[in-house]
Structures are given as C-alpha cells and as structure tokens.
Image 1 (cartoon, rainbow, N blue to C red):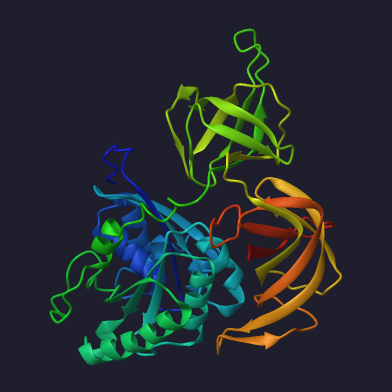
Image 2 (cartoon, rainbow, N blue to C red):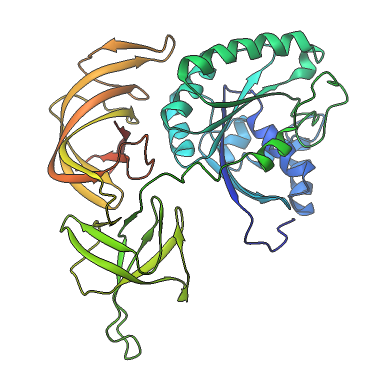
Length: 421
C-alpha cells in the first residue's frame, strides 16, 4: 500500500452516492486496485469471495462491501469508510447506500466531505435518486461534485448518450446553484477513465477520475470562516510536573488560531490570549480547521465542555429561536410541539419544535406547504426554540458550527440532522 510516509499531503474527504447497482462499490474497488492501494491478501480474499458468489470475473465491489449482510445480498446497507493514499494526496471515502430509505446514511457520509461523487447508470440516465443525492450535496454545501456516468460499456461507449445525460445534469446543477461540477464517462467494471484513460472513449479528453480527485483545489473551501474551537475536554493533569496546567482540547471548527491571538469564550464572554497550542505535547505555531489541538490561555478563566472559543472580533450569532433545514432520520415522525435534546458541536440543551415551515419535494425541487408531521428521510424547513441560547454560525458560513443534531431525550437516539439558516 503506497502511503509514502508523507504527512504533509492534503487530505480529501469524498462521499459516493447513486442508485442501487449504479456501481459505487465497484468504482471504489477499481480505484483502490488500479492505484495499487490494496494488499495482495485482500485481493486473494476478493477472488475467493467472487468465486463463491458465482461471479465470472473478480468482483471489486466486495472490497468495500465489508458487512456480512451486504456480501450475502450484494448491496451496501451502511456507510463504509475507506482510507487510501497516492503520491499526490490522502483520501477518506464514505461509500453510502443507494436505497431511498437510507437517505440518512448519505447525509451522515456527506456531512464532512469536500467532494461528492454521484454515479449514474448510462442506461438509465438521471433518475429520482440522482436528483435527491445532488440536492442533498448542495444542501450540505459540498463545494465540488463529480458526476460519473458509469456502465458506458453497456451503451457501446456512445458519446451521444454521455452528452445527453450531461446536458440534463447541467440543468440540475444550474437550478441548484452548484458552482463546481465535473462529468466523467466511466466503466468502473473494466477501469475505463477511473485511473487510466479509456481507449474505448478516445472522444473524451478530460481528466480520469483519479487525476481529478488528486488535483481538485480544496485549499480555499474553508479559508473564510471565523476562528472557532468548541471545547471538548478540559485537560487537568494531576502531576507535579504540570501542577498548574489547564488546557482546552477540541477540534478547530473554523479559521485558525495562533499563540498570542486574542479570544473570547462563550457563553461567559470572558476574554484572554492564547499562550500555547499543542498536539500530543508538541507545540505548534498555528492550529487550522479540522485539527485536534489543546490550547492554553494566559488567564485562569472558568471554561468547561460545551463552551466555544472564538477569535476576537469574530463573534458567532446567538439565540433561542432557530430556523433550519432538517433531514429526519427516524421511523417515528416529527410533530410540532414535541420536545428533544439538541446538540450543537459539544454544547447540549433541550428544545421544542415550534413549526414545520415547509417540506421539500425532492422529485420536483418545489417547497410544499407546511405539513402536520415529518416522516423518515423527509427534508424540511423547521423552527425550534431552545431552553438556553446556543452559539452558532449560519451553515452557509461554517458547516460545523452551523450544524446540529436532534436527539430523543428518552432513548438517546439521533433523530435528525439540521443545517441552521
């Protein structure tokens, strides 16, 4: 497996989505195989499994279908995460299921992604699931979308078929206001345009799938967000060496922090300066978005889990009346008046559902007037009132501080994910 020992390579997180049998798992298997990112014993296991399942050729989709139930049925039923690296970049892949009833898995897998890969069967073209997954990707503010028109071998590698599908996708992309979209004709089964250019589609002169994900620019995706660190743990070592040490650990949720920066702690509004930043006891000069760090401050102030450290002059919004877009995950419906817990980063409080403002019709992308309840996989706009103020940024500005989850107080189940407007 080629990791090259290089920790300075950028990390790209991408999610795959599409209808059932569109070839998501095969694409990832082909990508790992052709980029030499799998071990020989894994390959032997896949060959044996393919034979046992009566497949004529090696079924590369079995590389990602890790759950036994999936292997028995030949489908993906949960989010499967895979890591691999090339000399150019490191990757984390979230492979999500295609069934409509697993929309929640797509939301889960896509929530941290820089890029969404949406597969389309060249024989079927744009279907309801294509629209649903593209809409969810735009709702989650994924900046880059790659449409892989797969199974081109099944349509005799026909350029006109690809162009027809691409034209339909371009209309959808414009309607949703997606700024960076790419279209690649592929055959995941045989490897055309996945890692190597296709000799069967010489009419396509764009990048292969691997070349595109290796080179797509994600540096600017999080540059403009204000500095944020939700406090996860207060570090108080009980030792003589660190007798007076008090650190605040968490994952940087926006912008960056440097020693000497002035900060404000919420909700107390107390101010201080950053004294040091460490990662595993090693001092660093800057903590960037996505990094898990421990800060120490110049002043001894009262900070606990759930507080938010913000860059001075970059204050978040605060309030108890919150409007958001919501994806409902649970089989038990959501009804106005119901009470839940709401978790925003590390901060938790209770809330009441005030109203369901409208539901999105995913087929037509139209807003439907307020409904009495929401059922599983519905996407809607709702208003809540929290028992205590929460501190947040609009989701459009910060995907971490602008998101929240709704939890059932009795069972502790996650009921929904919300994007604050």
